[in-house]
Length: 326
Image (cartoon, rainbow, N blue to C red):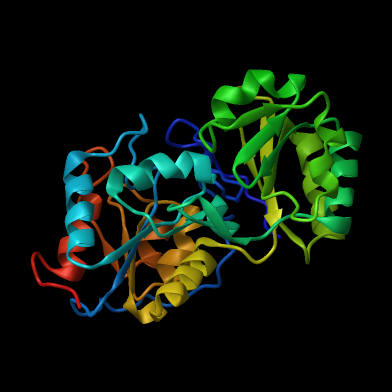
């Protein structure tokens, strides 16, 4: 378990950067990936699968994609390059971007906890908080009086206490569902479990729940704690089932297509992208990414989310301008 105290609410505080994952919009906690020596840049291929992050990579602070990147991705698809998304967002927050780009295959959501095929909206893989881990988490949330949100594959369940924070959590998903009391919801006892749980409260209270998870559920859950910029006294945490990262999602999708990880390329910009950046055959950090993220990638884009074109740059450098893919 890692506890992260640095700010993770850059880019409008989008949950995607904090992310139920832990950095679920965005958020794999710092230190979640073992240190690796810098890798040398790969040759221009042969790569067959491109994975892109959304917030801060494809989407700017307003949630909009630059035309240059959209056009480059569509052209890559026409050339036979497989393209997927690996994001901290839930599926409903991911699907519009997939449709914009023309992606109909599997995409990785909730920082690797949920993989969905866009065509038909079918769940292909899901890691959920369930059983004893769910029971212990529920008890801790109630004991520490935290405002909680349950992420159920594609929906976010909230109660009246969470209403004021909906503008914040809707970045993860636009499918918001009201419950009289979150801690009484049937999801806690469901077979598939919860994709993630987000909780907000005072720092000390959130810290106690994080400590409970680390003590009682460390082998079943992963958690990250972060300052919530909206109000200085509020902190947040995101908990997910153990084992899922953007790297595991990318590996699953690569295997689905019959590719090795050496044949993959990815583009990202934040801490929850670290596992993916270190696992892909070739990886690109956006120009505005923190130094830690840049060091994890094989390449650094000259373009930033402010200028746009970072993904287009990565495609040209990794796949070439016009060479047809097999």
